[in-house]
Image 1 (tube, rainbow over the protein chains, first blue to last red):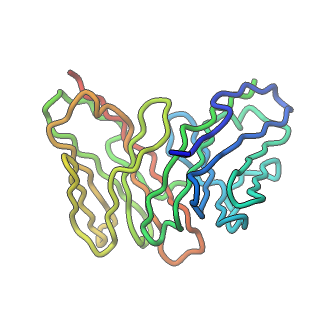
Image 2 (cartoon, rainbow over the protein chains, first blue to last red; image 1 turned 135 degrees about the vertical axis):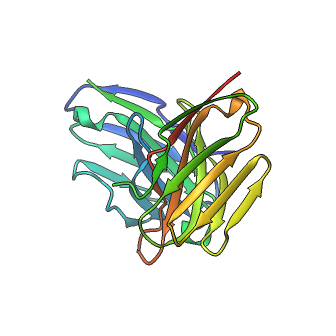
Length: 116
Length: 113
């Protein structure tokens, strides 16, 4: 596709529910990132994939968060037993290569999660 | 935790004026990037400056980088109402295994028509 596509755009979940957020990166992009952005704050890193390999998951806040990219393209971020503090915008981004080479990262519009 | 801190947190100016936003960071970097985010939207890349560069221009944008002070500034000249958005600096930290950018907390710019 032309850009990074995320779905759903908006999700309201009851506390304790599981949610799955999908990211469709730009075709051919090797690197894929997930970020969490609380209201009024900058994005916080969650996890990074290079193709299908999850090379860095140091930003995942708890073991309730799980991400996968099984075929090296589409990625899913799953949050189990959602809590109110999980309410945030979840941003997916992709780039041709990693950031150390100065490649531009392209962001999706985000999935807005509200846990009630 | 966030690597960068933007200053000011919020800025309100009149159309036609210049807007200057500053970013400070804590560790050595490979490069620094500036992003823009309209309300409710994703982030859009504006400009990248490498650690061996001191200044870069792109249209109405001018970015400076001072690695000795670990700071950067973004200048938007002749601002327009359409420049109203949040602006974030993001750093690619050197000497770590992390390949993702680390973002600051942002400056919310309001340009009054």
